[in-house]
Image (tube, rainbow, N blue to C red):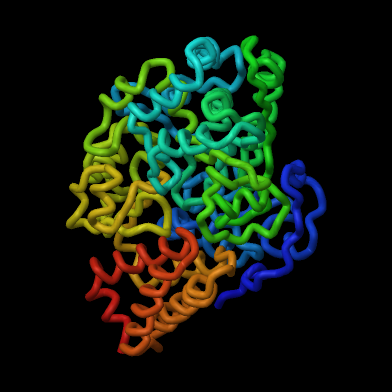
Length: 511
């Protein structure tokens, strides 16, 4: 079942500290290339078999069958609003702001701001002008006051992470934008890069100024070719306008950016794997500490945030941390962009304040399920996070509140499931994805995920026993306690929620 070429760690290519990133267009060493799905060839026109497409497979069975027959597999094209998806040929999703301020999606809802002229007409680079006058400490203080937490899944306090990098001794430092948005159901970062690229660039310049960095990378997944080309064009515009390069704003501050294109790997969304990928090494997850804030890219202090996190920063710097903290609730401040999958009547991109109950997201924002379907469960943040069952659908959207029921905010992709999805089918699908995308570095994930997939494949075929379910529980415990990164622990979190909230349906599959 576990058939990824990269499941067996190979010899790592050596990269000297301080050398430039390995070019995405360059030929990769064989041991590195074997790690990836898409290092060769064009994936455009391929069908997707991500979890959002799995949930909607009954809407187009032929396309789903096509996706399942493809090799290599394609997981998530950023078109979950049109699932089951194929290629990047679908119209753009609707965008609407439900929060008091459109901090993340405001410009997209107004039609986008792809050029620097359009961005500046929406007060673009105002925050950077302000920060260059008030100094780096003003940025760090505003972030700490705002209560902004990372929007990539972990929810770590952004101000604390930035302060950690800023406190490192002067010298080469890096800012990296994690645009390897591979969580099924999520297409937020894709459209931010395609339709509002300068918001990300301004956020990264502010980050560099705050922490003392002089070089930045935007790691764009290969499945997003338009985002890749738009970002490259926007960087050229920003450089021509004097926002990148030497002595930015007349200050003793130099910073430049480049795009690094990934080669197709979900686990490269994990920070240590992503940094090793940029270095040209085999991107297996690394044990921590040390953390990237101390020793990251090329062994230097590195600030790494995802796209949505960085896009929040210009608004916070311009309007103040207090204004941002006034939105949201509890320990989840500000707004969150959500991307809803095609099982909703109104799939699309939506910005809401934290605290909105999941029920309102499903019924009011998403308009309920297509065909009047009855909701069976909701995943927020991709397949490696806990399922929200119907009895907990009134839980508020918040980091701690969702964690208390075994779920999470994650990246913000919202996938609904209805009666067309059997729980055993879903578990097999998720663990098939988990085994295929494992980096192979740690045993629980490398071996355990494939074994859970096999157990539930047998259960679907009527060839599984109670002892197999006991083995599955043991494997989930091992994944939870001994995995090196969030890939394995996330799979465990998903499985625990299934075993906790759907026990009758699970047990009925075993003799």
